[in-house]
Structure formats: structure tokens, C-alpha cells
Length: 110
Ligand SMILES: *[C@@H]1O[C@H](CO)[C@@H](O)[C@H](O)[C@H]1NC(C)=O
Ligand SMILES: *[C@@H]1O[C@H](CO)[C@@H](O)[C@H](O)[C@H]1NC(C)=O
Image (cartoon, rainbow, N blue to C red; front, side, top):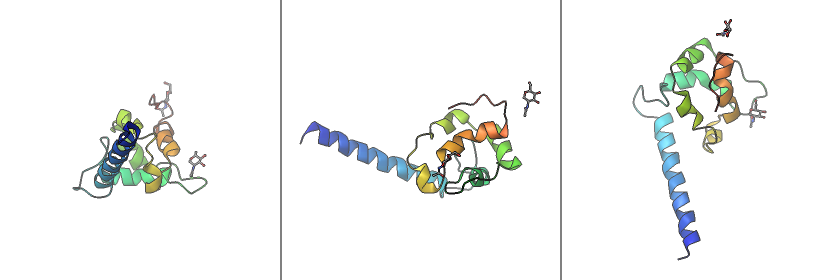
């Protein structure tokens, strides 16, 4: 087998593993299983502000911003180019703007 084929195969396997991890982490899991220091409920609270397919999503709610304040933003930023986010209906551009929408002074830049 050519090495390029092997590389592609490894890439595909990695992607599938990542997607499976994202699904189990975001869609189900135990009650407070969340992502990047935010619980599922907190993530859900932020979702309307970052959805894709609407021209002007509503600003993040106070509950969302409160949750973001204790979230691990560095971790959050690793999702910036996550190809799986659009499949969840999340606009990653908007997701990355969330910290500065909550707090104009936020120093979180991805
Ligand atoms: C994602 O958000 C950006 C910034 O608000 C917007 O320009 C873009 O059209 C959005 N994309 C989708 C698919 O909604
Ligand atoms: C942003 O910083 C300015 C100057 O330090 C301060 O007056 C303002 O209250 C801050 N805004 C927020 C939302 O924290």
C-alpha cells in the first residue's frame, strides 16, 4: 500500500474518533458532562446566540455569559475550526465572538 493511502486512512479514522467524542460529549453523557468547563445546560443556554442559518441571532443571555465567565476559553478556542460544529447547527464564527459579546473587555481571542 502506498504511504499516502495510509495517511489518508489514518486521517479518516482520526476524524471518526473525534466526531464520536464530540457526539458523546455534547449530545448525551451524564448530567453535568459538558465541554471546556461548561455544563451541557450552560452550553445549551448559549446555543441560540451561535446558531447557523439565521441572519441575526439573539445576543447571548445573561446565563450564557455567566457560564462563559468560568469556562475554559482556551479550550473553547480549539473548536474554532472544528468541521463538526456546522453539523450541530453552530456557527463557529459566532461561537468565537461570544466571549467579546458578553464582555467587551474580554481578552479572549482565538
Ligand atoms: C456565521 O456567522 C457569520 C458572522 O455573524 C456570518 O457572516 C455568516 O454568514 C454565518 N454563517 C452561517 C452559515 O450562518
Ligand atoms: C471595560 O473596561 C472599562 C475600563 O476599564 C470599564 O469602565 C468598563 O466597565 C468595562 N466593561 C465591562 C463590561 O466590564
